[in-house]
Amino acid sequence: MEQVRLYFEPNPGVCVNHTPMFEHYVMNWLSDHPVEFGGYIAMDALEKKHGSSEPVYQVVCDEPYYLEDLMEYVKHEPLEGYTVHVYIKEDNNNNLRKLHEY
Image (tube, rainbow, N blue to C red; front, side, top):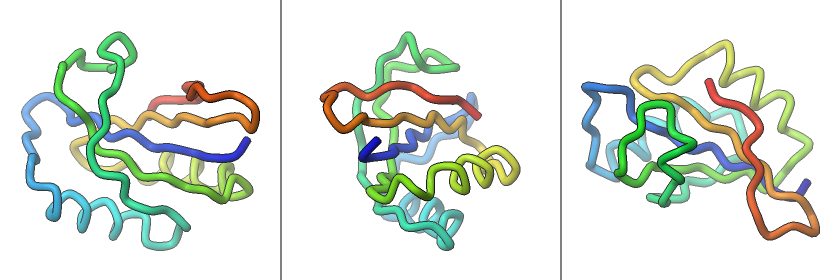
């Protein structure tokens, strides 16, 4: 595994389309983890919990040995207003593989 990506799908009724505000929100939430804000990304609507066709925000972790700690944090300290989708990218695979949804 070479990279972990967290996609943030807004829950129904949540409308945050101001990138600097969301970046501040999510980076504060993940301040103890080695992640970088990745901006918007398109996400397959069939993999979304709420089915919205809008892009989602993402953060990227290039240090995969933090995966277990990062997943425990996401599971036990949810980000208010968002469903978090966890993806991994394998070393020799260009496609992301969905790992979990919180």
